[in-house]
Image (cartoon, rainbow, N blue to C red; front, side):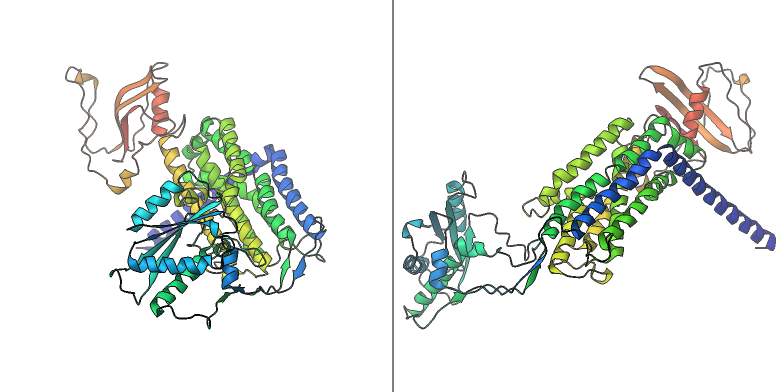
Length: 585
């Protein structure tokens, strides 16, 4: 490569960079013009969020609730003896049904000893309604299914099934004694090591094992096996007690509980204007053809969408910065901040990701509508719904996995989850930095701020795909529509053979001049057809080759279809039928 070629290549790169920079300058100029023309909405977007979050900081620093944080001393619970465990069992239930399987001589001996142990100290023997035996676990399940089919989980009756495993010999006492205890109460949540959100102090999550009789049944079965295996040996020299783990001193701050309800509400109210400033304007550009005009002037599609992202961040970036300062530092440095244990850069990043996810959320909704007013209304309804309805389902472990994943794709739902995680860290006094971003406040597999941030990124990716696909197959009144299966084109590119254009046999070939053989076809139009409103034919079976380096003009009377043909070639309209190929594409 000689010096002239290097110089030419360098100039070409500089020219491309200049054009690229020029495009961004045009986008920024356009956004500023839009903001200037809608200055009241811009002011509203800035002032309302700041005022609402300033109110949160003011409530925190002026102790509006009237209850200051107080320190609770360490909690040490008293131990429960065997008699106490059995006496406290089933206090919420009047009738207890117990069934077991399989029905063998060994299991019957176990249940007989179990009955003696439990009823000897149970304060109301009439609670034990029956002991039913079944040959298999399946029959035991069917029994309880019929018995409790129409009963609420809050009924005064409860059922337990005891399933003995690996009972091979009818009379032989197994050395490896295994059994399962199954309950008719659905909310045991044994798959969760910790609750999703723990309070500051000790919890009573394990009390169900005591009050609903699980511990009594487990202890009774174990004692019964010891009696049977030892031949009825005395157990007077043996005692058992159960005690909760102690809990250290902790601080109770009522504001942390208020934080989890106030912050989602104020966030929903503060950023609802995104559906006005972004969603409505995007639909307006699509329905008016401005978007396609910008693409005709040289802007790539991704730059048009990026321009709207910048338009939102121009305002919401400033808003997020002010909100972060109010939450992490407050307006009075002598008083405590709202969020004291989470680094301010994490809070700022969380709000920025939330705003970006909300903007992409509006993009996805805008792709389904042609009317700006309808699109904006639907966006606001979905936004309010995501706060009022979906927030109540946070932490509900009974939700199906598919429904939980669907909810997590809503920005407001994910932000509520983030607020709960922040409140958990604040209540336990655990500091959060970028080093422990993916650590939960309770350890284990509990939710973390890192997980919330990743979900925002996943949301943006999902909304980008939805927007890209829907706008491609349904671009609106302007733009070229793709078939619904167009992503398949990226996987397989079939070889296409196109016949050369020939006139009809009865056409007078003397009217046409054959093109020179050395000329290359730049645009090939084949059987182009455009119909408006179902019956108005504007272009009908147009076939034309446009050659590179040649000036081509379309001549015809008014209404002949010249403008429609040019609009199809430039991408303003989608053809009803036919194809246009540019250099074989």
